[in-house]
Image (tube, rainbow, N blue to C red):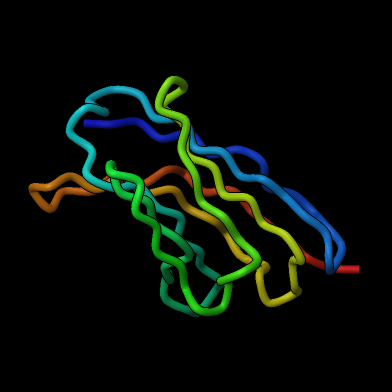
Length: 116
């Protein structure tokens, strides 16, 4: 099992930037990929970006060119750099760790609000 702790959310104006962090602990050596998802009330949770243990990345079309996912193996931390934020990026952002077995774990979520 892995424990995930997100941080870095907050209030930002449109066009601004935030960096989310997700610190992983526990059985991290079996993680196949990590990712960021987001959810707004009344809607399903949606993928934002993922990064595999080999460093391959994948992004939702809505964030391509604005968001960058990366990881720091030494710190067991995954980051989501979010630039040029838009009001529609407002959501609770969740970190996910996925194992090759199909199991996955979620963090508690961090709120990002983009508003003037």
